[in-house]
Image (cartoon, rainbow over the protein chains, first blue to last red):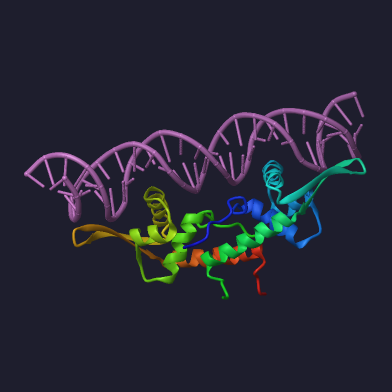
Length: 97
Length: 97
DNA sequence: AAAATTTGGTTTATATTATAAACTTGTTTA
DNA sequence: TAAACAAGTTTATAATATAAACCAAATTTT
């Protein structure tokens, strides 16, 4: 039987966010917005969900006078992502074992 | 920029259905239901969506006296699945190129 | 042989989710 | 100093997933 897919990650935008954060030390709101093409509203909501799940850390501050929201994946997020990818492989037959 | 994910396939149950159908000549409702663990209602709805999108063929008939709904992936479905998997790989970094 | 149960579904109602539109607050720029 | 812009947040709406309720026929139980 196929493993269930973490609904928090099985969402195009949230998955895109995690996908970006996996590859970098940290990324801010504007960067993520540009690289996902998401609207600010949608992104704000999804970042919040990831934060509340403990999948990412969110640090709101200022750089100069402009607000900046910095996001960073957590260990919990990294683990969840790994599990999600692993489960997903069963669906898309990319399994090597 | 990340490619958009076909919303018809980016659904746990529909993806599971296609995943099953990719590997076999055909599969019936009961078989798919058992292998996905889905409720009949949910499965019925999702099979219908895949059918209406032309991703699968659905043949309703009888085997002996019992009704049987036979599903088979179409070329359209196969192509869509391939594209979906390809797009998805960008998100989950399983890209080989 | 009625009644109850099971099989193989479909229809419909509900709960969740994703998404964008509208709004807020502060900052440049004209 | 008013208009436009930047960086978000809040809220309303549209879409989606999901299961509950339902149906018809067949099978099993009493």
